[in-house]
Image (cartoon, rainbow, N blue to C red):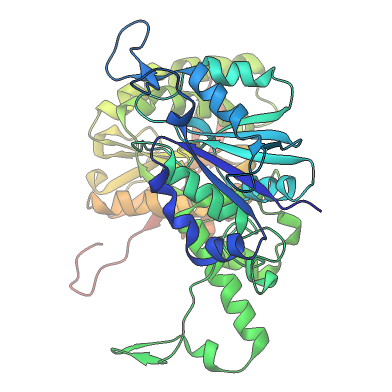
Length: 465
């Protein structure tokens, strides 16, 4: 079986000296991986050893020439065991890796795939360390049609720019080599680390158990293996939700046990009605540029809350008059209209609430609560279908009531369809009680609502919250 081989081409081969250190260096010395570093300038043909030229179309910086790079990649196939021996040609196909900020993000899954590929006997890798403004784009195009080239992958370490590809090459090599057979003393060490599953790794600790007043979590010294595993799982879930929530989308919801779901819920992550994870969510005041998205959410959610007897024409007329982009722009411009949005970690709007304070309130407000100015109306509270039944309505409700309380009101009221017993039960869980009735008009048609109210109790100082 042939040794996995990686060639690196750079105009600064000295930059790759760390490849002789640590695990990669040991793997190199022990023959577990064949790492070779080449100087790009060795294949130049002019006396200045030029590797770049000015960019077509103008612009700052220089661009690396594709002809020089193609010669360099082809030259890596030549192997001379010692200076006096005749060169031989490595027959393996070439996997070309091009570090570039415009490439596909490099992930643990990508590294695992590369390690598997390099462990096969018929392929080797060449990493091109570009500099300046990058390598002429035609190189990748040309390599894609070159016999003997298995594939070309343009890869990015992240959303930032480095001076050259050497740092990225070091990262790629270290990430791949540690996954090759025999490199790690304990192969199990990769099983629970970050990205081996779609979770960040839990924090680790060692002696002393009490260092500078900071103690190791007691569960880790308890000797209870099951409790330790549960703690590690809990912390990994929480850490991922806070730092890299997008990773959670890769978790299989069916594999989450009751405790997993409770831990995620504490971090603001819930299982949506569609069976996918939502969150972490946040509630914030709506901004002027949210108007169009609010109108989109309203157009989806309002019809779902209407009684079955409501006609499509009535719904459309109501949406056009009261839930248009212009309507939300007016709400957002009025200081007595409090608009809150519930959004996912990626900024997607999942729902909204509208609280009307003072004179902004609609018809049907209850009386007798220290004057009309001490009231606020919870005019709207809607969630997209996949966010319903998740507990997020309660999150949005709590935020809406807190916003009203912040305006110094004594109570909040709302109107809900008299036939919607389920909604009335939900509101009752938040302290609302039926205090009256009203008529609500949707598209010119009258509907019967009940009016429900919740009062804010006095603080210890005797002043309303």
